Amino acid sequence: MKAVHLSPLLAVTFLAVAPSSYATPTKRVTIEVVTHHSSDVIHVLPCVVAAPVTYRIASHASAELLQLLPVGSSVKKGQLVAKQDNVYLSQQLELIKTDIESARVARAFAEDEYNKALMLSKKGLASSSELNRFKLQLDSASLKMQRLQLELKTAEIRTKRLNHHAPFDAQVTEVSSEPGAQLAEGQPILQLMSTQNKQLECKLPVLAYQNSLALKGHRFDFNGKPLKLREVSQRLDSTAENLTLYFDHPAKDRRDILVGYRQEITMAVKADNITRVPYDAVELEGSTYRTWRVNKDGKAERLEVDVLGTVDAYYIVQSEIKPGDQLVVRGQQGLSVGQLVELISRDAPPPP
Figure 1 (spheres, rainbow, N blue to C red):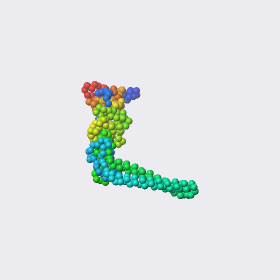
Figure 2 (cartoon, helix red, strand yellow):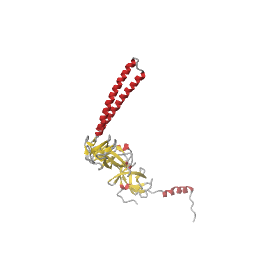
Figure 3 (tube, rainbow, N blue to C red):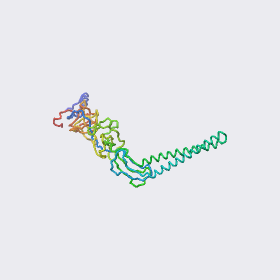
Figure 4 (cartoon, rainbow, N blue to C red):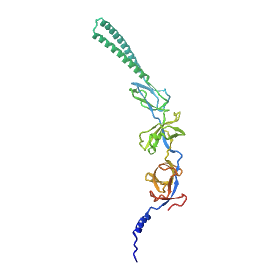
């Protein structure tokens, strides 16, 4: 048999055509169009009622404790909660008053002696050193009177504070002493918790946190009432990666709201890049969610999405996906980035 020889032109043509037989074939896939998520994404945050501030009552003077209210007592603003004996301070007040009268007499005498020395000095009968000595005695007597008057004022304040009153409506949560104890100045007596100053402390997973400014733009609701975010904690809790959000409790009367009571608020998040995609368009790879999108050239693209929640048979995701995009819901197996796809109806049989 005679050998067949190809012309150079035919050989080049063959080489140019042959590789096309190894090109990635078009794959048949089923797609679904992305729809807009018209509603806000709702996060339910677990909260607990807390009393942000407690008030500690302490002794202002060294005195015996005569009486105090027990733990659990509810008190009104201005009500007596503890009382100390005033016998020693009363005696001290009388002693200071006596010292003040003595200092007043000494000052009057020093003033009289100074005036006499001043008249003699003008006549040349007293030296300047003698005049200065009498002036020093007068000034010292005046300063001693000022000091004693300050001591008297301080002792009077301490005497008044031997009776301890509630600064607000409160409940006694702790006692640190007992009647009959001799208390030193500054020693704790009892602790009060406000029955009105209560707040909600809510946990937010750090994965849902963007920044404080973004959080303040979200909508928070408690039993249908809007809440204003007051503060965001600057650290995570010790048991889980949660931030704490602080809200003033919206109730007008908070006396019957129990500290430690668990409640919930809702956080509504609105963003332009949040869409609704079908369950079967999203795949989990390790800890990352991804989906396939068909671009305007009919080729497959691989995208990463953040899943915010679920509604019926759809994921609510935040990503670069836009309403109207076509996502692959069937035929992902073996699909590669940049591969041409043939779109088929969702109701058609599965592609091979």
